[in-house]
Length: 327
Image 1: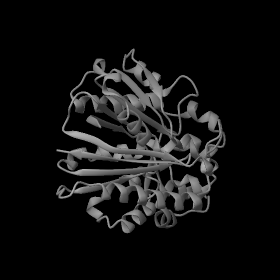
Image 2: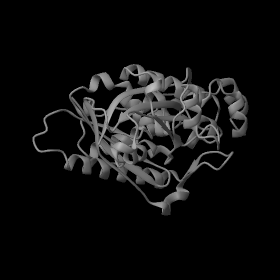
Image 3: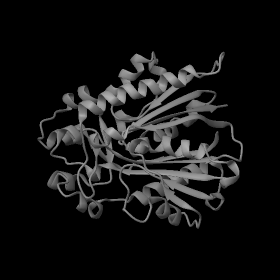
């Protein structure tokens, strides 16, 4: 069990909308994108002029063209989480990061964010692609409270658009950039509690979603979609089945923000009402490991006195879930 003290999120300013993607002449139009994936806009750290001119053919050049860095994004999200938690950065005793698109191979993203916050504390990255938030929470919830500091900062920074080939319409329509941050504790109580965490993988599917070093994102789209719907449905049904009898608070679902059509399919299978499904994928795209926690952060004030079931999936293949109870 973990106590959740604060959340934060950050999205870059540059909007990557469907009209821009249609202007690239890659075989998509606005109605095709919205009908296929339900995404209207995304945010990117890359200038639109750069994307239009280069289509990001060399992902290694993207970092130099970018208007902001993952570290700066993580710092913004972490600062929001600290403010919401009513904490100073000096009270953080550990920093963990992870996701799909680390800023560098070394040092760890967590070390870069911690340094930006002026911290000298243990830092490490725990990656499981888009399901990193689930693996991080599951890892921390399994540790002895006395082995952890009072407060742990978990930051996931995703600059996914740097890895996308913008001549490939299958991937260009999906992804956006974002950062998320949460502050948790196994020792200091708070009104919001993370429980019933889970994490699992099927390494036999490791080849289905890949980003080679210095290369472009690729996936076996149909197989991944089937996996995402089936596994998210199973995760959510398991969380629903373990609810205490008589729990009367609203039950909210937040899934991996892969695309809106996938999430709608899960809601239909699990009888989730529209008002009980929270997402931001239509306005921000698939933001990898930062997607689901950024939804939680954006809607945090609306989710008082509720039970939140989060189920996320990703490369590996990997998947995990958790229950968050808010007083």
